[in-house]
Length: 372
Image 1 (tube, rainbow, N blue to C red):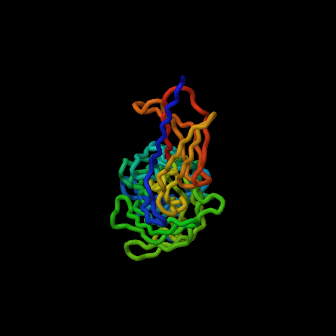
Image 2: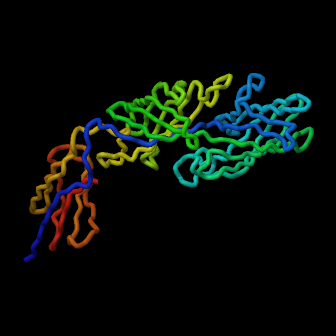
């Protein structure tokens, strides 16, 4: 006579969590502008400056994002210190943004931890006197916010012009974001320190509202005011307040932050647009959604319990578990093995939830209920 030995067990592979518990994520904020310092010819006679505002109003050293092709633009002023003459123009050229060696979805160019090298091109216009092309040769070592960019301009009228070797700077801040999740919003504080300059800091409140149609993956940054180490204010205008979760990386959220003025001490607003990335590895209920945008818990996730009964044609599992939390039924023929096979996966809508499986043939089998 054939005999069927049936063994059942229930256990959970996850931790518990508390409702609206404060959590800490890691934030990185970097400016899409590049800060260029003044360059000069080897004899010191001629200087060259970049500025995102008209040089007549001041020189701020900003190579600003164009959100077009080429990727960046700036005015420039070439000044002869001996004859006290200057030559103004406007140019556009790319920064080398294609490399992403660490595969985190963001250009290595704006990530201080990554090295940068490469050549980009563009054009300049100093009408009605001149126009031509520009080539930019970039180099920056990994771990350094500072690099060099050699600008090589070729004039349609005069041919190759003298090279100008600029020191440039990537402006990146890193620090903790302490937050408390809620059903329709996320509120917290952010405290950031500039990479390579520990005296430069930004801190303040940060608040997001969740999308009503996709609350786990889309959020909207609200207006806020941050301050630096000198108590100067940086107001978020929220023109680019849309944030989304990277569904490949799973734990990362990213979006643009637009300041009314992202740099102090210049004659006009500049360094306006920044990228904020938020990495949250907290996942209290192990459902694959970081706590940052997940629904706050309503207590402790219960360890599932199982009642197993044998019918004439089927096995009946009565599983008591957290409603809406994915449950897997797995089976194996020997407890000495490790290759448990998932035979059913579902999210309970009732407590308990009754699930049936076909009655097995002869032999020994073990079943377990797992919360992934």
